[in-house]
Length: 131
Image 1: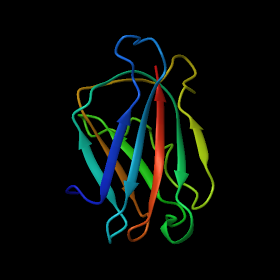
Image 2: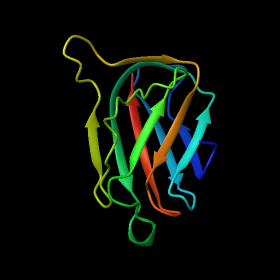
Image 3: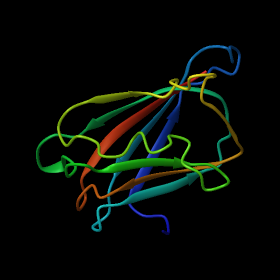
Image 4: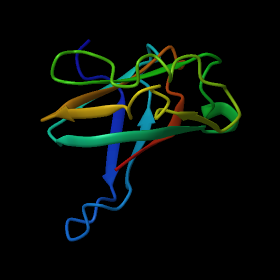
């Protein structure tokens, strides 16, 4: 999939305090096919905590069961499919630190954020927390 829709990223990492929780906020608007995708040259190195999704309301609300993936340099979804089938109206939180033996770690020099099946020009926000 070529870059589609619009995805803006805000990274709250404080470079002076790398041990603090980092929040990456993705504000997205799907194109007419219902998808949005953007590759970011931002390294991810740490442990995933959770992802929170917040759909827009009214005419901009995404279609039910839209999907979010964040793929690393190996084209592997670092969310492991846990951000699929998002709700059209409700904020949802999915814990990502549920590995039985260890926390879910990630290390990649860049990543691709993708929204699929959201409906034409619909929008929302996703917030990924990590340390």
